[in-house]
Image (cartoon, rainbow, N blue to C red; front, side, top):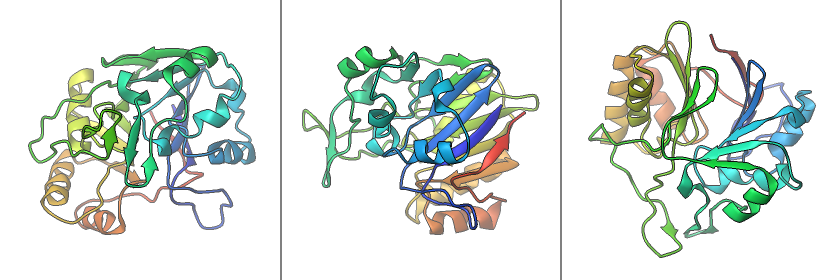
Length: 264
């Protein structure tokens, strides 16, 4: 499988692509062409064009969760009806807001039903050969309890139960692809192991939602270190201090728009 970063907060030196505080990965797996998240705007489409990636060939879109820095690009990509399957948790398209205003998907379930084939599920789901959407992630690591961000339409705390990830079953173990990891990166890793029946994690790429120093970050670093993950690509919602804490204990890779990986 091939993974290309179409959008991230960061860009590489001397690679003249656009960045924004958002995330979008493009996956090629056999005959499938898959978008994992769609960023905040049309930046992912503009970068894809410059990379000579034909997004008209995309036949599936997987959404990690419903925040607009991961779903905002849907409004640009689905301006017209497309023969594409959109895979997400049922809560992905609920209304959400925080102190900045609305942070939910720009498109509703009704609008998506008119523009694509929508598949909503809380259960693990095979998106493509050896590529699994994990569905709703259970909390198994005590130090990674769910932290609410903003409110739902009812004014209740939003614990982002829709936050999920992809896992690829490779030759030598599993490779995990995350959006923001609001569910906890260690919870995601442990659930990916359970779903696939594989304990060996060869790599992780995506947002880990590690922003502040403290016990949660320290415990996360400790847990990740024990996994002995060879290829670790923290990006999007990982602060500089968190990256430094990770780098002190294990090797991490620079990630940004334009990065391309071959995952076996």
